Image (cartoon, rainbow over all chains, first blue to last red):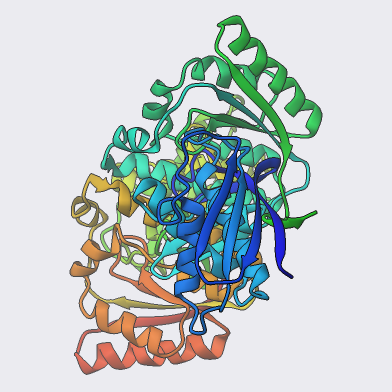
Length: 310
Length: 310
């Protein structure tokens, strides 16, 4: 195989209570990459479409930074190189794991062309180097679900321990992405570095509840657990119409609604697609009537993660 | 039915990472209560054995405080009263939910004599009033597993939301109770009221991992998740030979080891009874060789909780 085309999905990190540890993968929305073997070693980005201003220097682009980390870990270096065409469908600064989709797609594609020396789980740590290039912090809460699909839990980092969570079939996500940019760095800055033990206990009660609810297929418990007392109260200030959107999601019957990653995208989880559709309509009306451009997506949970496409 | 004898198990709260939210029930170790209907309304404690210095005034004893809360919630008050004989097998200040066992046994017994107006779950909030009398704080992390059995998660308190967690069959607990008293109030005082967001994230990653590990029956994940960066580092200072005991449990193959409740009891979880037995021997040797009296217990996870006995 000399060329491969890969899709890696956009992702929703945090999932309300699971700040920095939980995430899930979306269907259809994500980045595509075409990777071609070249005769001589080295990485080259020949094209980036769908997003302006991204660096094409291999040492600066998250996708090639991630691939370089993969190559660095190989004892036997390949005698060939790789050329990348990246098609971005996830906008940077959306809160939908844009950099993670690119990093995940790139390492997944290169791993394929190398005849898969690494498992999907092993690819996570390489994709994290892309995240480090993007945000200064090698976090896994987006790259893990983008590579593995489904719901993931980053139990810990020393060593990296990513858990694939069981979850029920009928979950659907509705996403609204107001067209304003919130930089992850700004959104990190607004968080308090110290929190009360009381709030922390509330949060981990909900993390336990969400994991149990997903495992049991208890939709009501999933909804009751989708509460974030740490990040949402401060980060939501940066997102126009957050309160109104959240209220409308609840009114339409969503299980829960919170910020996707560091925002400004907002996600809701619903049981069944028809409820997810209603939430989407409500989101559209809110942003349209306030004359704020917003993209709305409806998606099942992507069970596969990164995959080779035609 | 005019009389009933009830056993309510001792419990291990926190389970390492699940500070204030998780707990599980032990077999065989627990309090027994005989409750007899009396002709006229009112509560009377006629006997307490197994523990000195506990109050027999109904308004002061946790068991009768809990029962009074149950009676107060009834619209139709019974025309009769109740008399209590309490047999304590769980020492107060052990960290094994002594007050919770008494409260749980008492409300379970009275509910039986009233022809069960309340479900087991509904009894939790009454038993919590006993905990409030004992510690000033109406917590549920011991009374929930004592009433329900198994592993429980207190997802939240507003409203009270207790989740019965799935768990695998081959888990065994080994407990060592060094014969020193650590008051819950002292053990609460030593905790910091503010924690870093970083530590909080570590903790809820582990809570998620523990709940997932229990649900999946993934013993290794259960063990990896039994890490407490919040309470154990400070509370363990109050417990003689904690480090040595924990190290020995790990050496003998336990999945994990931490403080039971607020201590001084230490618990380990193992896969299979033979490992739990080895841990018990190791615990005994450590405390005997240092001439500290200590009781050691080995127990499966009690799947039933409070129950009527002969």
